[in-house]
Structures are given as C-alpha cells and as structure tokens.
Length: 359
Image (cartoon, rainbow, N blue to C red; front, side):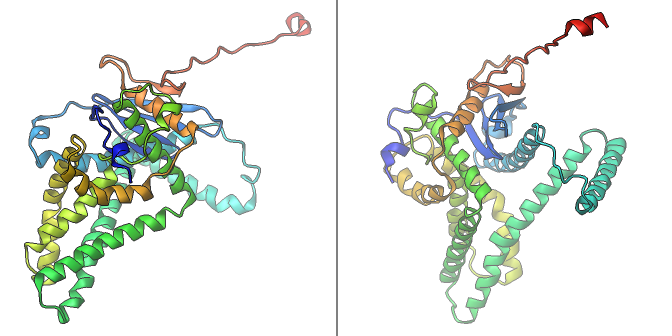
C-alpha cells in the first residue's frame, strides 16, 4: 500500500463523492447528482437530479453523520434502482422464446405485478410503486444489517460467557467476530461476476475523484495513473463503524443478552455519527495518525475496488462532469458524450421513391 498515491500531496480534497451502480457510476456534487450507465449498445446514458438544500442540522458534528448515513442508505438504494431502470430502457433484441409455453407462468406473474402497480398508482399516486419498492428495500437492508452484524455476533459470543468472565475480553471477541463476519461477507459477494463489475466501476470512481482533486485534466489516460483506494470511501466508513463499535461496546460491560442487543441498537446512531466525523477528518489531512487509522478501511478497499478499463473510466468522467456545472444549469436525461453532455437526437429522415411520390 503506497500512502503517497492515496494521500496525495498538494491535492485539494473536495466534498464530491460517488457510488458504483449497475453498469455505471453515481457522482454527488454540491447541488446535484449525476448517474451515468454504460448501456448494451455501448452508449452512455446520463440522468441528473438537483439536491435539496441542507438544513442547519448538517452543521452539527456527529448529528450530521447520522443524517448523512440515513440519507446515503436511501439514496444508494434509490440510485441502484434508477440504474436498473436506465438499463432496462435500452433497446434489447427481442426474446424469441418470449411466447413459448415455458414462459407462460412468468408472463402471468408479470401481469399480476402490473395490476398491483396500477392499483397503487390509482389510489396513492404515480410515485407510489417506486416509493413502496424503495421503502421495502431500505427495511430489508436494515433488517439484514442489524440481524447479521449486530445481533448475531453478540448472541454467538454469549456462549463464550460460560467459560470467559472478563467483560473486556468478551467484547473484544465480539468485535473481532463482527469484523471477520463482515470481511467474509465482502469476500463471498466479490466472487460474483456482476459484483466484480461493480467493484471495477467503484475503482473508476475513486481514480476519477483522485484525478480531479489532483488538479489533472479528466481523461481516462490521466485517471488510470491514480490508485483505486481513496481515504473518503464509504468502505472505510463501514470499517470505522466496526472499530468504533468495538471500543464503545467495551465500555458497557457484558450485561445479559437482551440488554446488550438493546444498547447496541441504541448506540448505532452515535457510532454512525462518530464514524462520519472520523472519515471526514481522514479525507482532509494526511498526518501519520490518520494514515494508521485508515489502514483497516484501505485494506478492505483492496477487495471492493478493482482496476477498471478505459470505458469504465469514461463513465466516471461523464458522471463527474455532470455535477461540475453552474448551479443554474438545468437537469438532463438522455444519451451523453464523455463530457456528460447530451448528444442531440438525429432528426428522422425519410426516403421516397419516384413511384411512391406519384402514387
């Protein structure tokens, strides 16, 4: 790990962040987000949205971390859903087996889903289906995270209490087990082909941000000179969460299982807030202490980021340029070039033969 390539000297840190999505990248700037996906026909499609102005709560340390954590969770899932929609809107070759008997059940299920969607739209408005899907995804994600990474570790380690009576040791075992479980989960999903593609776009996002903060022109050739690891990455944030949780939980002793689960759930907002402040500090300085604290997260990024190709870097650059615009620039939606600018649609042309004109 070369810290000189990660904590770049004379770089100008920005608040621009991003997220890898399905076949693309989302960049978040000062006043808008830009999602760019690479579609099956090799074209790039961009969709930008304005951000709501931040309130006074975003200025309060720790509290702002909690708000941003929740907002990032909702925005992340919503952006993934949006990228899927942008890909589905592309022109795909017709499926020759679409009318086959084997697909009859799938067609029936699709019709049922269509009726349910129409019912939601009729009674609750056009945004109701998307809102329901988003809320469901957030609830499922939170339930999975809480169940697997908060409740399960303390429940499993509770068995060690039969032999170990030292509270600090029990909390240490729980914390290490939680981190090991999280790393194992990342390793398992990283073996999936689609996830590896996402990790390549994740690397492209980091290289593009490094290039911009380093003051270089945003080109694929310049971006690929930078490291795929970045100190302000959300992966590092999650590792900070794990480490801070270990330290805070150790201060609570080792009460009974119900009390431990309740205390851990109640401390989640505090841990998220402190982790955000630590991540923000890590992204704004390069002193030795920050480098040491950043090592666990950077090591995890070695799994969650991969070297992208130039086409993936071009997507990152288009998304970055999509947010580097004046505040009064209107939002856009459509096929774009490598500068994140819409490509005008070619007017339809009609050819007429002499026989057609005389008919």
